[in-house]
Length: 180
Ligand code: IMP
Ligand code: MG
Image (cartoon, rainbow, N blue to C red):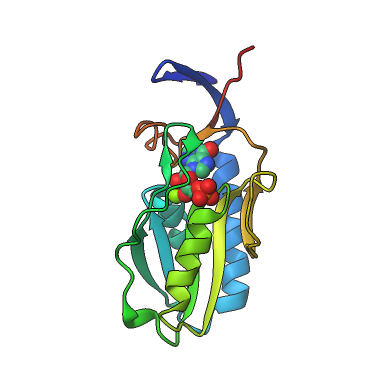
């Protein structure tokens, strides 16, 4: 499956499932080195991070908790810039080491907003682990400690990422084919 059609747009294979899983295992090892004895709380950002969080947490071999939060700022292939309310965070992250799991950081606005909300709950530390990062799209200063893949400004689909609600179930990452 090298290309596919979603909502009349052509997407082509970008990063295969086996490449993703190899990188996810490396991220888990980095987290193991940094958090093995501190019983951290993973905060996974829905919907996009559900596959990444699932695969990453299966590679984690130390005590940890997981919470899910929901926030969304995208419609179609363009950021609306509107940050919606963050649902699902609770006080139990106070005095804990928090690792935020995100599918992709584009402008960084979603993560910036989320980090403010998380810090208001007084965790002892907060770091971000994002499968994907678009360094050329970022608009705000953010320190993302754990990054799976740095990518260009193309629109990506699959492995949790959607295009108008479709394609989250795809096991590989695809990118929008640009036609001139
Ligand atoms: P940001 O606030 O611009 O950083 O956007 C973050 C959110 O937008 C991500 O968590 C994704 O849900 C979504 N997003 C950003 N880039 C893409 C993409 O290339 N494909 C699908 N969703 C994306
Ligand atoms: Mg997301």
